[in-house]
Picture 1 (cartoon, rainbow, N blue to C red):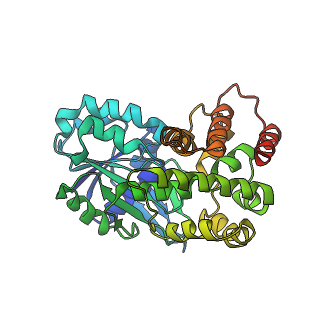
Picture 2: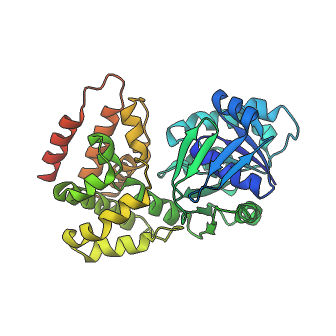
Length: 352
């Protein structure tokens, strides 16, 4: 198959490298620094055991237009690996090239919820696949990434009953370390990933602290559990209700069961080491948005989406709403919100 990787960051480079290893035809669309490094030295992937893939002669472009101007002109699938806050721009670019992508499926690897609906509105449900990645990938250079821990993988689910997507699934299943798992319910898959994404994410970003520190603090841990239970209440309020599913390497159903049955003291002992260890040495995604005052953040499709959808369904979500608002404030380039002020705001929230 012919794949176009739109967004050759950590996720795009990892997915694309696996497809190259599976002898699929892959074109990477990335930033100029990625393209320059990939053309000069190839794409490098370091594995936990020290083995390194060095992929030479990869096909690289710095824009969608450039990729579509050279042969072959037809792609079977476009893998959207841009951040969620870059999806609208990507959709605009794809819409402008719709005639050249008339036969392609669109695979959404964005974190959070609401991204697949945007794609379906433009291209139709039958052409959209939802995807998740649970492998922790770190960037080591412009065209170099590192898999920090084995055991994760890719989840894939179709938005419609059209079976043409199975060719994409077959190609992904041949990749050496993607560990593909397919799902019948794409919403269950994406919301289960959201539960994992929000754990320790916003609080770590706001306090500039590792997740282990957050989960070892009794009051902050209790706040995290309130946040997760709010998300579960929103999932339950859907019609029909959204059930959690296990993702590659991550038993989300066990997490949900534990949240329902165990007190916070038992949960803290159970989850502290597991959650911190599951991220490898990486800080969570929102941390980097706040640390760089990037002006953009995925929090809108994570905690913000929980709060927004909860409001529509009549479910109270004060913790998710407050975390989303604080992160949105913190990522602004002119933000004066420092970790000390964020901690005071979170402490006030624990008293509500």
